[in-house]
View 1 (cartoon, rainbow, N blue to C red):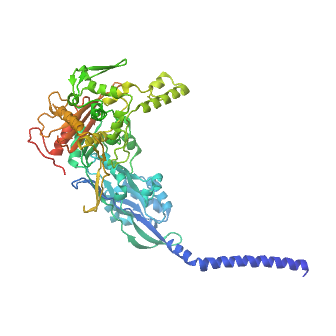
View 2 (view 1 turned 90 degrees about the vertical axis):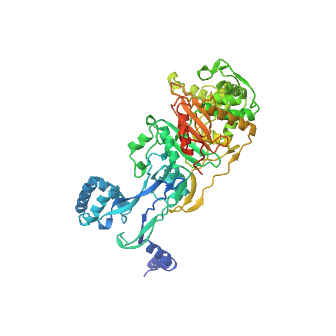
View 3 (view 1 turned 90 degrees about the horizontal axis):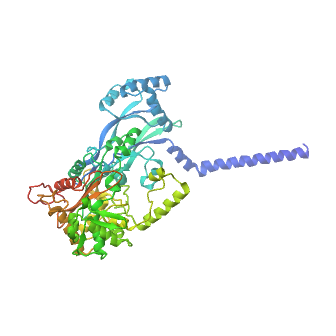
Length: 627
């Protein structure tokens, strides 16, 4: 062997030795150092878990009556290891199954195949909510339907249908954004969670804990044998402050009109009723909802039934806002409770004349009488005097308008309290838009650049003083403001959830509301306003005295009629405090096209108060029926 050949052999042998060493040490690392780890992973890979979804907890009213529950039903599923392996035989099974379920075989195949591709060892759902007779038929004829397994499931049920639908909400499949939220830890794609209302707000309590069926599979994913199961745990029961009877009466009072109502205990913020019309049936969401149904529920021409007008409505409040103006003017030193202001029927501001409704001349008035007869001119003058300050706006914010109420519902909107800054900045943007885009007059009229087409003026403050102009508030916000006057300046946070319970109703956790904010309102000022509201509901000439004539429960209340312009009907409002002089409840009602407050909103509030106290005209004075 030549030296060159020997050198080459030595080089090749060295490389082979190094490669052998590397392989040896790698095998030694895998088998000796990491053997336990990979053995555990291999064993774990033999076990598959099939989730068994837990039934959700029930939602009950303050008296324990079920608002949301579960109903037992059947889902038809196919078990992959029991289905015929031959495709033609499997197709025959689908054809026979399709006749029983009223489904085309192709549709069954399109539903089943993607599920089996994703989880080849887990049952695939063919159809949910199947009639029990169909399920029993399939079980009795198993030989004709190999692999087909009816399974008992629990579906969400809303026994009251449209009643309290905006409160309780509905379910829907979790989306990818929600899966990234830590609140939905343990939820998998395809699970159904609360998507609106209480179902969403308290989902973590209602959801429960899923169980699992554990299976051992071989390397090919085929079933070897079943293992132990982990039973699902039902979610917790949730008790609300809602009174089902009050809720029902409130919804009936709204009828088919576009509107909303709110009923709250002024002392602790417990909400006894909160409704919006039109409503919807949340049972539609118990299973997958069709897009056409969803479009109908969000259609403006259909009244947007999914919109909760009680907390999301953004309306001018009309004369019900005079309570806020009165507080601001008294506390700001613009007027005293007994100071007389002359109401000549109109007020001229620049080149604009602001008039009382119907041009009525009320003459000399102090605050109490101005509230009783709802003198616009009296409050116009206060708004005019307050211009150049944000006195009214600041007190509106303090009393709960222009900010979320904090109610335990999703999408609690803040509304709008217009200020000079808001309108002036909006006008600047409007001018920039017009200069840049040069819209046509037609486009401008349709709000191409928005509607803030002028800066703030004294007229805006005059309008705000009587709840008109750019003001936007919800019935729940107005209820919070009136409650603050009734309970000595405490701004409560409205609450629906009372406590978490087990399935038998045993209390597990009290849901305490945050501490109320305390406003410093002079007791004499507060009493003067309450006296004026009481006179409005009881004395001759009072705007709602006719509505409450002979009513055994003493009421302090205020009508509101908000003009919306553009040929649209006026919005009707009523805010009531009962019983006077130590109110316990506030009731607010509104109708989007109800006309004068005394015509529609006040009678609706009266119906709700009758239910609250179990009283009707002609009855002797009655006490409260609520805790």
